[in-house]
Image (cartoon, rainbow, N blue to C red; front, side, top):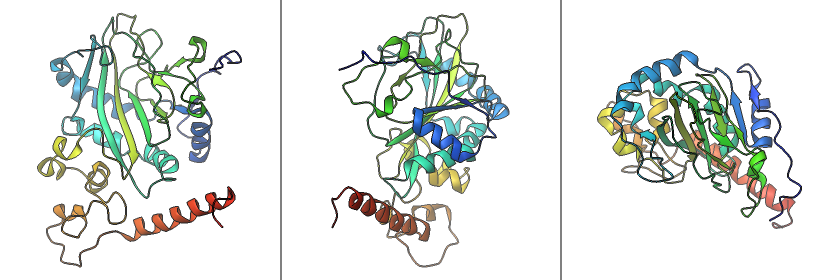
Length: 297
């Protein structure tokens, strides 16, 4: 492990919501994280208001990782209508599509949960998840700063080897006002911070993953059909009532979303034109990449 040449991180990678999506994508892929300031202030406020009583009843963690002064809350989408709009925010979904579809024809919601750090909450061990199978996000439902445990990230660490460990000066804290969102790659070293303040810090984690992976949060039990029928079609498909790829996830040889389409009387389909087109594009991309590396002749 060589950290002798490590350099201090640059200032926080903060951008305005009006920045073109292509520039956001480039910055995310370059630094491994991105903070979009005040992307959805009203939605974050309404989500926080919806979840306050549920947070009050949530238990503290029972180990170092979960945090003995940290409360965690799942099943978010049935507890807050506003949270459903954050999950499907067009800017975040555009970023997920831009970074996750090199290795899949579709992406999905992998996890949704609140991380509520009360005064005295200790920092998590920093973790490194490897290749980009995930695009996690952290929405600030309250203001984030270094003192109250703003999420720690290590810029550029998504390009490191697994053996490399960050120096303290290579770590930055996500300092952002409520309504902002931190987006980072699964391979970026990250972890919750220490809350040394006298204020609570509340964030909502929404993770997006490759469509063919098993989701961390079992969305079908957290949001069964009788709950999911209240969601938009976009959200239902995003949480898993959809194909994970061609011929992946069908029910009775047909689209799993038919569960919410009682009037449908067309033919059974084990894929969609959109997914088939993505599959063809993905295959072409991979073959071209391998050919460029001299592995396909």
